[in-house]
Amino acid sequence: MNDLIELNTITRAYQRGSETIRAVNEITLTVGPGEFVAIVGPSGSGKTTLLNLIGCVDKPDSGTVRIDGEETTDLNEAGLTSIRARKIGFVFQLFFLLPTLTALENVQLPAVFQRNGHCAGRAAQLLERVGLNQRVHHLPQELSGGEMQRVAIARALINEPKILLADEPTGSLDSHHAKGILEIFHELNASGLTILMVTHNPELAAKANRTIALRDGKVVGH
Amino acid sequence: MNLLTLSLKDLRRRRTRSALTVAGVALAAATLFSLLSFNSGYRLSLQKEMSDSGIHMFVSTEGCPMEAASMALHGGEIPKFLPEAHVPAIRSAPGVRAATSILLFSVPGESKRVDLFKGVDDEFPKLKPHWKFTGSWFTNEQSIVLGAEAARVEKRTVGDKVFFPELEAEFTVSGVLERTGSEDDGWFYIPLKTAQRIFKKEGKLTGVGVNLHNVEKLQQTKEALETIPDAYVVTAQQMMEQIMKLIGSSKTLMFAVLGIALAIAVLGVLNTVLMSVMEKLREFGYMRCVGASPGDIFIIVLTETVTLCLVGGVLGVIVGALGSSLADQLIRQVLPYVPAGKMVVFDASMLVLTLAVTVGIGALAGLYPSWKASHASPMEAIRNE
Image (cartoon, rainbow over all chains, first blue to last red):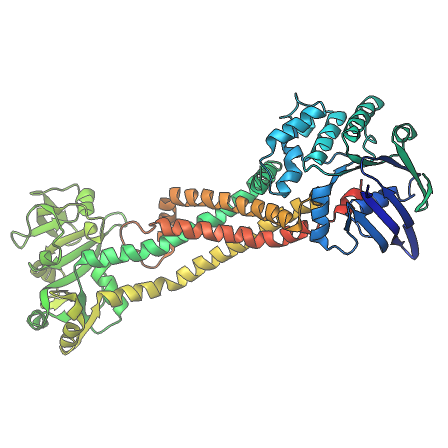
């Protein structure tokens, strides 16, 4: 089976004053369909930069990135936007829910950008799947942190992506809610979704099928 | 849900700020709507006044057409008079249907009031076929016909006596005009000979009002009348043009104020929307992460801006329409010549134009904030977490 994510000696460097920081330094790795991968490492090790490169919100200075067989390195902004919209779902530490939209409308948001705003039924199903069928019409301010993250997960799934990228998804949650989120991830993974999760939490990382450890922009352990 | 509903929902987030922006645009729109309404209404009102006067041209002694216009419509005194002896020649000129001799005088009355007297002959009613009055035209030399407003102020009706101490003359009311909504309502009409005697202008006239059989042959008649020595002929059209020129500078000033109001509205909207965009750059970055294109973000922000302005425009039109009588009164205070009747008249074209301008304000003011928002970086949004 072809790999879903293929990174070939990618490097991403930033300038900090006179110093060049290689946030990602010649990393080569692959992720197959249906994997649940935890990316771990200390602060500044390059976890989020790596996730950004995989999520097509950033481009490497060198090396190549292939997502579901599509070479993304040379794509323009429109091409990258298209890949983000069709193939990747994002879950962030701070949820990023629009405060003026209900849970249902927040879930629909990525579909709206695909000109498929008539997906309320599917959005409601996704909210039910993450256990929020009673909170469909609530605004974010009326939800707990755990509930907001569930909405964010449902939103990430609305365009039926192949990959779910989660950056510290439980970083703002207590252990009870974090456990619930991880359970959802396991269920999604069991249904075939490929998940890459950046986390500081070793307990969470241990629940993944595979762990990639980073230090100073390099992979130091699989 | 679509991009439009996203924009509209976002507007509700900062209600006070949105409301203030809308109020600013509404003020500019109300000013625009009022001035457009005035611009059209003034001309219509002037045309009506010209038409109601029944005078296609006015023959006076040589002078400026503005004086002639003012005399023909509102009354006024200049030291020159047209010899009454010219009247037969005027009446016999080609195309003349009726020519009425007119002697105008204004006399200070009680408590700063000015009484306007129009000495006219029996041809005068032919110029006013639309006139309706109770009673009759002059029955003798001491008859007087009162305009509706003059009758109201004097509290007189047909058959009553009316005494003017300043003239030391008493008249009997032979007729009272029904209200016309024009300058005609304010006059005291007395027989020409009586007026000439009272004001000691025997054989003299302020001018002669001429009504034509066929207005299209106006030029031909005008040329014929201009052969009369010392006669100065001014057509109704010329009077109107002179008046429009006279108020031109006032209009320029009003439209300059409007221009400033619109510029302030654009800057106000730009400021509000740009501030809002800067506060939400991270949100836009997140939207980019979940698949929004730069064009999507541009549309969302521009729609918000145009919606704000459109709502302001609609409110402005409503305020402008409701406040039209107030605008009418204000404008009357500042213009050098105001016709009778309503000067602020609006129609659908002004509504459309006002809304189009406010939408234009929105589009113009929204361009830069929309561009700025559309360039929000998805990576920055994530990095800042």
